[in-house]
Length: 169
Image 1 (cartoon, rainbow, N blue to C red):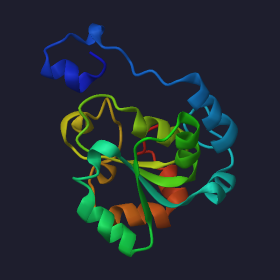
Image 2: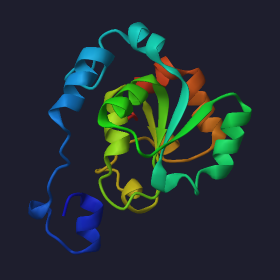
Image 3: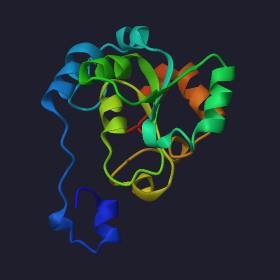
């Protein structure tokens, strides 16, 4: 299995779990462009924040479930982008610009939240399937709850939210 949630569902022992793999070029980009440090923080938060825009990235398989929150965010002048069909280079540039990334009811260790977090996006999910597993996705309960209000708070208080200990790194 490739994560703890799936292993528990299929009664697979922990020693058979494979950790998710992140392409070295994604990590290098996060270090070079976002200032990612080995401890998960960012070396120049003001520089990172200056690159960010009020953009919320939504994993393509979450778009339908996120529709009502998406409308509320758009009404608040937030750009909501469903991620589908982007080249690897275009996606990493978009992740660097986005303040928030959303992936709902994940059925496995999906890369969108992890890779976007490395680029300095604040990650939100829900307590459905893999998102419910605090080992696979170690985020605070407030980042495991989806609401326009919570996402807007993360956008408006970006510097505080991205450095929150309840954020995945």
